[in-house]
Amino acid sequence: MADKTDWGDAPFTIFLDTSETLAITVSGRDRWALECLIASGEQGCTPIDTPGPRWSGYVHNLRKLGVPIETVTEPHGGPFKGTHARYVLKCRVEPASGSEAA
Image (cartoon, rainbow, N blue to C red; front, side, top):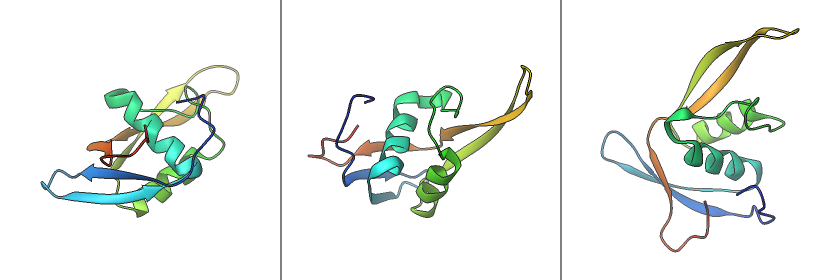
């Protein structure tokens, strides 16, 4: 996934807990973030482990499309200790059939 150079439009199917499905199309960094979340599974992603300039923005955009993503606040140490977010998909997401995404 990290070696991709084409982050154009890609369709995904969101399998909601309500047994409903949702079809979305994402591109660019939003697509990158969604594919990172899919690949990370239940562990989720943090901006520390999976660096990206605007994780909170990508998650916001995906949530607006209906993708359920949980934000878990975690502490971190070091000279600038504080907290960071871990983002976790709360449903199954798959590339739409015939898509080359993820």
